[in-house]
Length: 265
Image 1 (cartoon, rainbow, N blue to C red):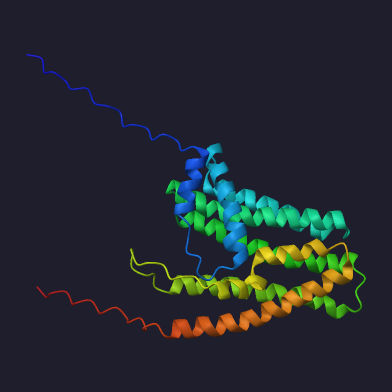
Image 2: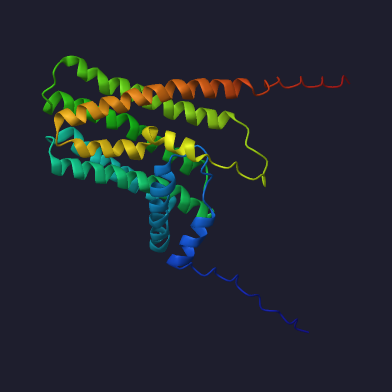
């Protein structure tokens, strides 16, 4: 006697979200604003959210958005290094750097929307960020040497000092975050401080990008860049002190207990 076979249904495919729905989901999945400047909170993250929703509708992956961010930032940095300073160049460099920064926010937001975050994507994002930070100040050094009429060669040390400061802030913050235990799931995020968000504005990469709008005037750009370096150096001292105290307050890790000896037969 033949047995009746119950047909099985194929798993239902999830309906793609519309643009507005994707924006709503992204708005609900934002990271904490603690330790974030007003620019990142009210400009870069919202613009990145628009890019993330657009990337979702286009079917892009988070890694592809990261590479788009690298392409825009790289184009701006290359133009800064190779072209003679002018007001049109200033606008082009700023636009490329700012778009690259917004896309840098979009890749993580898209990953959270898709539930596709992982170590490889985080690694790629950090590698691109590190390359961008080091290359930007190297490009300033090149344009200082090739295109600027500097009062003295000492100005060539300025981008090197800024580069060192920026790398230490980036790596120190990244390492502190990795070494600090994460709060238990479900714990409410701490309330962000508006005063701190204002104070962090000079240390925000997006605000630094605006300095390149002054490239049309060699003197204005030099002094604005030098002022930002001085502020970043002060922030570096404050951050290093804070991070070291924060990590020193954590309990020391204990060595693993020795394995029990194997029974003698």
